[in-house]
Length: 455
Image 1 (cartoon, rainbow, N blue to C red):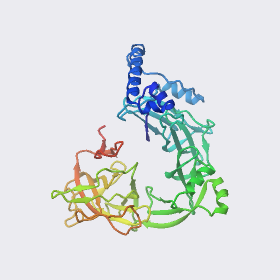
Image 2: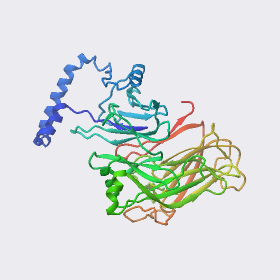
Image 3: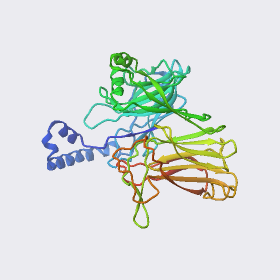
Image 4: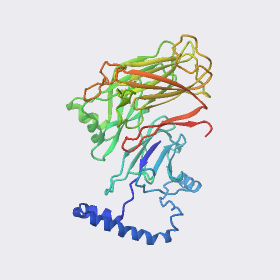
């Protein structure tokens, strides 16, 4: 799923003034008068609209019988405008049955619903991305890019208007001649369409990286990155190995030919093997920006432990041969092991899942503890009873207060390891999902959210 930031409410008169007369923008008196004029207009129209108690209906025409049936079964209430505080958003999600829907975070009502099918078969949706956000006073809509697979395993991409759900471009979804094993955002945009580029990792003995949009301009924007891109594969349940690859752009004489295909070769950079016999249970990585306004933890004597914030950190949980689970913090760029822990009495099954989330310098995970740990084991800081255990691991730049890395840029190739402090708590009931709060300016302290099995 993805959140769509809706445009804040503003008067049409103020929009027109901003777009046509720059002097109005610099005149607070004119802006004040315009605002009250527009407010008066809205007040006059308020009784006629039922005092805001009744929602509108969708006027988006369907382009297929399945879409018509879906819209008839699921009534929608379009939401096109946010609020001044940013609480009113659209929560857009995709399903394994080809349905993409947008819900209002304010009321839970569906704003729009879209059914995606390829050759008569529902698309299995893997990821949804907001690849372009609308800007004030522009006609460019917010873009939602949906990536999935058809019945034959081929990659399928659809681009929708994130505000209305309407299919853009030629009105068709794109079936690509390959199958993706991972999809992720690339750190650049297509200058022509102003949308975020996506990378689709193509599996096989020699993995490749495809760039979306599949245009020469997008591929050239990718090759214009100041440093070559590194990405990892293998963080899947049942895997025993994590591999890092570097995408390679060809030399100048061959660049145009490769950019026309928008598919690039890769080189294997590193391999991280789990201990013999262990298999991966789960993997967690950062979601969204990790900007923070609080750089450390202030101690009782007013000294500071500075946070170790590594945007390339991935948390791996594996099932051990001797029982229990292993925890590994791995850098996805260098492949280095940053920290590891063992929970000998942990039990992970389909009904007792392992859950994890990451935020700034914290990794939080939960599991079921089956019995009391052995005397003298590495788990002596863990609660000594049977039940659900939540572990919080905090990473700092040093174990010595007021000591920090003075370099201006973070590098995964720095050999320095973080200082890790862990604490464990008994959880009163099991969680089904973990998440982290995030505010618009990243100033408010982040909280961890537990979605409980009780609902």
